[in-house]
Image (tube, rainbow, N blue to C red):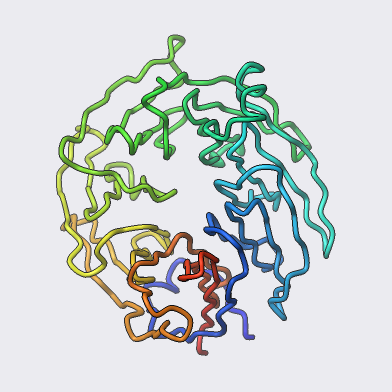
Length: 349
């Protein structure tokens, strides 16, 4: 497989039509896949509610490593240091260092209080929704029904220590976060259709500004907020994309999806280029025009036929997407047997 140097212009010059299906890895997980990502060496990793994290050989795509967690894995990603972090339906995160076919748990982070940790041993309603690696290397951890907890990167280490937190209400659990400026963030709460702007520089940490999004549904995708530039923020809905003026704190455009239907995942490829995943295993490549404040479809994968393993593929969705060195797109889908599979695409050149 020929590798290409990653650059900002690649996705301005190429579309989904420049990729071909490499393989379908069927029934790899026995439950819904929650995340896929690439390790620094190009190996693929997938996590699932079946409590497994799988690491695939980058050349053969066979499973090299199986990590068995005690709880369902809600989210997984890799830091700039190459540390794989898993977020559990319990009350903790695990940090793994992967070398060759071996893995080592280097830290377990427990952001919940001791009370919640004890309950979480028996109750899966407590969960770590997601973590976001900030510009300074620190972590923002979205802790369901409790808080947004910030952890500081230890000097000359791949581990973290507790820094501070922003308490959230039980009925306002945070579902995504984007960093706007130094210690300033926008946070989404999809089950309340609410976003908040936080200024963590204030001694009294409060939501500086907030507004309700009435009669709209923020998508339940793990990616809901995307910062385009210092003025434009994109908010993903179930069937819409909302463009928000950060300075004015108002929605300036509401764009309805005409072809993709229900949005289940959004992945940023470059400055103004995205992949949208939806029901029916449908993927579209979208370009954002920051002058007109609009989007246009560049390409899609409608020509692909999944009937060989799913006679009712329209009810299944793209749950995660990842790209490495511009030559692979990895997208999970759920098949009719209740298992989950991976579809891997290769750049044709």
